[in-house]
Image (tube, rainbow, N blue to C red):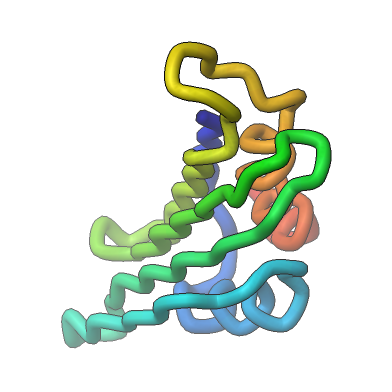
Length: 108
């Protein structure tokens, strides 16, 4: 499993647009919840096949500004091969980090 939490200086809607446009994976779910007063929560779920891990990985991205600052959580899982070994050649970490890389210019 790979996981990254970071803050950005753009709102969740802008961040979602950038991620959707630049993520090299299949978008399987998108949800945006308007909390009112300019606050929102966005959820994106992607899926991608990794040859080196010989498995599909899932990426969940949660973005919200409910507390005033936009927080991005990027969690990748499901990329390890086999029932007993949780080893994926770094695929999950790379997948989770891809979101930070896309939003790098806005990270605070």
